[in-house]
Image (cartoon, rainbow, N blue to C red; front, side, top):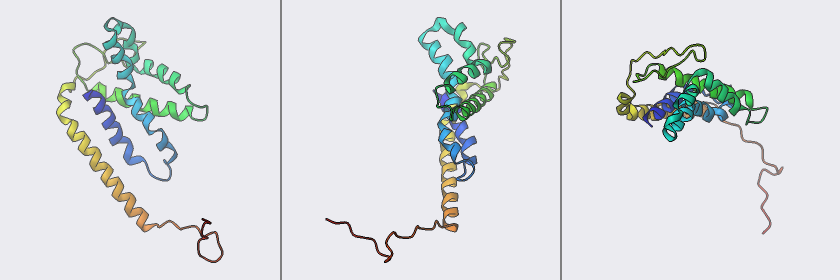
Length: 181
């Protein structure tokens, strides 16, 4: 669980500042897919391993970039044709952020197979123990709160300097028509 929170918090802190009302407004709809991509490798491999411990040799491939790409390709097909490209892109970006973050973690067994299916070499850097990240969860959440506050204040300042014009009233007299009772 702490690992999933770390992945989603990192995704939010990385992605959120780039969402502006103009250029990226359409892509904001797909934000949840980016977040889902950051937890997808763990959910698909580890959740199955917890439920079925003997399945690890079969599900380990889902926690690799190649396995994730196959799974993401299948998931993208569940979307409408016009949405598939962005769904695939956001899920893939999230999954690769997941793998980047996992690269720094230590593990008692080799689990970071970036080169699968060509090699079973472990590519982890073994710098951070996942258990050491648990005390940092409040810091992640505070960072997200601070980021959201900064972005909110920036939006307010921008909207105050560029007021939105109100459309003219429908009646020519300048007053609203009253509804019949």
